[in-house]
Image (tube, rainbow, N blue to C red):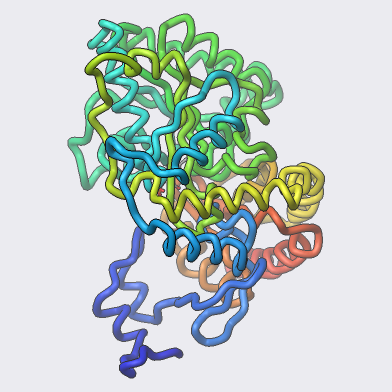
Length: 458
Ligand SMILES: Cc1ncc(COP(=O)(O)O)c(C=O)c1O
């Protein structure tokens, strides 16, 4: 255990003063896992225990830990101009990053509104959609459609868009007008559609059309979708899904928001994952990987069409964040994106993604593994009680398996990742984009051992 310079016991200080996010504080009574250092693809805790980072921190550390170039970029910018807001003023770092993000974005998504994180970007996109329709003379269009089990953030708007009732319940009533449709979990698709991905994609997309028609197209502002949905354990879109969603949105004058807080910046293979999937949204929300986590920033990218009514006269978007587009974060993002280019990170992901898939699919020989699904460097492994019937665990079993056994066992065995039961129980994996076959094997070996033990304990 490390101590502070004043000699305070950090474990006690954590228990007494630190409030963990989405954390049962009671679990800290048995010790607070404290990560003190990262180097490449590995992390070390305060006891010197080494772990491979199977989740890039939290889908963030695209280029791995301990990158000198990014630390130096932050220090240089802090020396030159540590802070200035982009309220009425601009600074070179925000300008250069906005131009660069626009150059990566598809279609005419040329305008960038900076935030400090992903939930704020989602919040921004909903407010922007509402004001956009108001400026277009259609103030009734304020509702949003999103998917069951999807996570979009914790501010009250973003939480309303989130499709996880148990996260929302303590804070109801939330923002009205956020409607949910089925997600694209092919493993749990309606039985008659399970063997026909195209028909499943059409069915799932048409649920969005149905929700818009049911609510009334004159009341719906936007649809929020991740290219590959994270919560629930990685649901890639079935073939034809986004093509049909785009048609539906156009038919009903509804904006399509691609929430790429996880999927952007190479996680699926391209800078923006809508390019991997093949659709052009009206807005993109992004954050996490933009700086590989070396400094926080988020953004909402907006099409020329959506920006147009804000462009002239006395109109402004009455919205902003003190730290939005922070110069240090913007400088780090530029340095991070320089490394993406000089190191050929996107090509590396595209070349190695099939190897990650085949390595993780080896786990399908374990009786507890029901499904291995994902795209790029982004995977979910669904755990089941019976792989033939796809029977899942009840709440008590899930609690015992995930919190009681898997989370500590994976940590002990040297793999940092997430065992999650916001939908059916899954292990989530999203290693740094600089990982290759050696790290995939390390992850698979640890999972194999721990999942074999978990099955024996059931
Ligand atoms: C798809 C998606 N949207 C929004 C968010 C919220 O981002 P943040 O935690 O930066 O507010 C997340 C966070 O994981 C996310 O995965």
